[in-house]
Image (cartoon, rainbow, N blue to C red):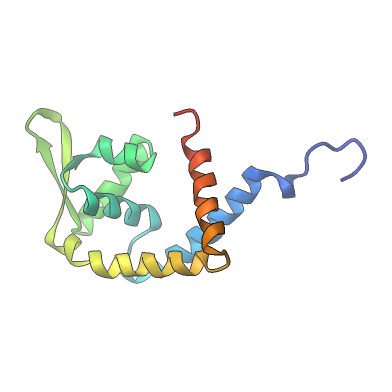
Length: 145
């Protein structure tokens, strides 16, 4: 670094995380294109496969996404016929999300795509390094919570 420079963008953690995210996101996006899904839409489906029948608000909390973002994701998944919204009988202002038969039929194949992608992404690390990296990323994500 030059004299008096205290910050190097190329060594900044935020910059490195953003570049790593962009690279992984774009590769995963390419793998999902045949299914007409984006990575955030896949994430929503993965959470719904784990816990079908949750509210749109709960899905947003699980995904760490705001209401507007979740609303767009849910709308697109519904248009694709992968989920359906039903009014919550306990609170008519809220919707409960359910995976449709079509959504369930894609689960095994999409989980295989995600598994292979993650396996390839982590191949450059030893099992110990990969475990440590995941632990460190979780510390960043959940710090202060």
